[in-house]
Length: 86
Image 1 (cartoon, rainbow, N blue to C red):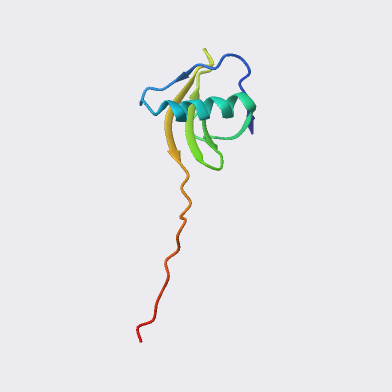
Image 2: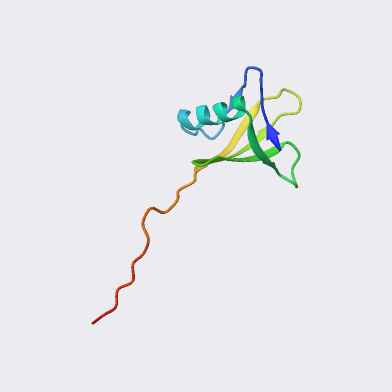
């Protein structure tokens, strides 16, 4: 499912995530992004891109977006190397 909010997007940030995370979310929502709807909760969505994950609620009354969770998608950059004892 693609979610695109075309009007002025109001993002509420009750958990005080960094402003940069809020702006990344705003950019994703403005440009249209694939979202995964929460099957157990109406109007709740999970958004993934290559760097971030967001969990949001979109108010069906006001259209405001509430940022509930945000975390960076960290891909391990190193791999464990096994060495044999001689």
